[in-house]
Length: 286
Image 1 (cartoon, rainbow, N blue to C red):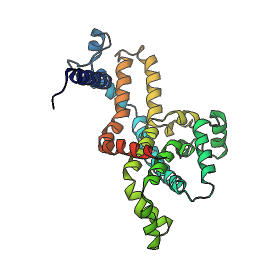
Image 2 (cartoon, rainbow, N blue to C red; image 1 turned 180 degrees about the vertical axis):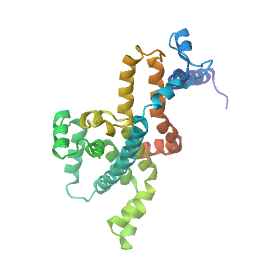
Image 3 (cartoon, rainbow, N blue to C red; image 1 turned 60 degrees about the vertical axis):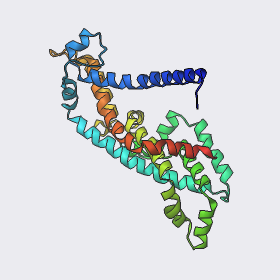
Image 4 (tube, rainbow, N blue to C red; image 1 turned 90 degrees about the vertical axis):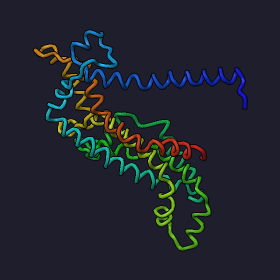
């Protein structure tokens, strides 16, 4: 098939857009990594913008990990991410599956209540009073239970469950399977792409969250990595000016960003193929 000149021009324009979008995504990552590995003198020489450092130093990482609180903060973040995501997935599945059954009594009312929470919330102060009243302050549960269920994720799984053929459920019930058996034996194995997508949403949310820790936790030994990195960066702005060996704040900031982002970046490629599929399947019907 011979393509016309206008088609070739249009394809070239699309490729140009893709290149620009790709560079806009890759260059910030390269910049962050380069600044974290660039010596102080080279950062000053290039005016604070370095994409490909001529020499590499790990001084920023040494200063960052010389703090004894870093390993503990890593453990807190990993614990909150793993346990919090497990709680999220269990509750989300147990809520999404019943809502996907059209014969459930009060289904429309429950959906209306759940969607209402996407549009309105109680606010920071009422939420804090609830967390304090339940005794969750200064505990790791304060970073997991208040956000145990995300409405958007519930809707993704609900829509996916509704897209499953009803014949599967009917044949399972004819064979004597109950709702728990249907959920565990049929629904969950077929919903792996959507569950991986929702799980990634929860995992990234827990890993990057620091606002709840600032609100509900005053014990510094329970601070996650993101809060500790934030505190270190604030301290570095004052201590760097008084130190004999000056380490640029930007370099320390970029080292902290790389250290906090690397685990998520390492995990994402393994679930990337399920990510797009899960979002599209969960958004088709509803």
